[in-house]
Image (cartoon, rainbow, N blue to C red; front, side):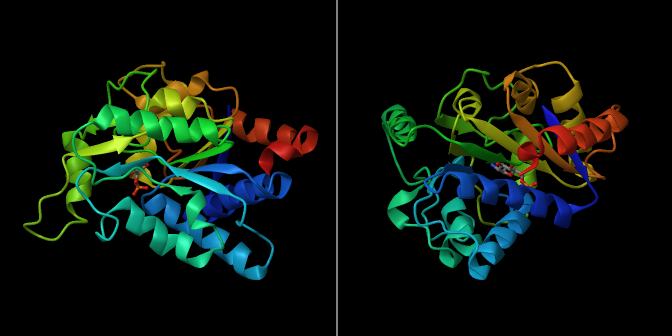
Length: 264
Ligand code: GLP
């Protein structure tokens, strides 16, 4: 596990974009796992900037998003389809045929649909780099607390905390979705490399539990401790409750010296 501590949102976005860009430079047909949420906005801005500068080509990149709200069509402004289009896809040269986001409008046979999403990840050769945010309750994707560490893509009921966090994005009186389709923790752990970003004080407890706490289904992101190649990129406010900050800085200095490739 590599913990990269940065000053603010701007710096974590730059670092994450650099890791992804170097992944694409090394493997132009990279399979990229994508996330949504306010933390990702800056990363996508940076990636769009690199593309517009002419230094980043997405034409062969394959993408898989983590999750989507159940009941929201792609055109709904709060859907993750819409978010991805607005913040990234409309501004880069990704081939729409290479874009995969769970379909929030499916009804009935959810298991079959989720199994087919897993199958398309397998057919694409698995995910090379998976980008993650983190919920205040430690969720990754929509794997709410008590999600099984071996879980696969499935229908998931959203927790009260997540519903409260999301309510502000919906119009007053509009009912926000109660469920989502999400990759499972087991699905996420199969990615070759995982990059988790966190910014802001509201995330500091979840970040500390995920990195320094025990592995527990009560904090889904703690399962990342099982992964051999995970990088946490955290800003000062989100890192406030970590007790080993000096150690992470020293590890980073040595990494830059000995294996700079790991930093992008
Ligand atoms: C949603 C997404 C998560 C994301 C989280 C954090 O719940 N399903 O993948 O990590 O939001 O969002 P934000 O970055 O806005 O705090």
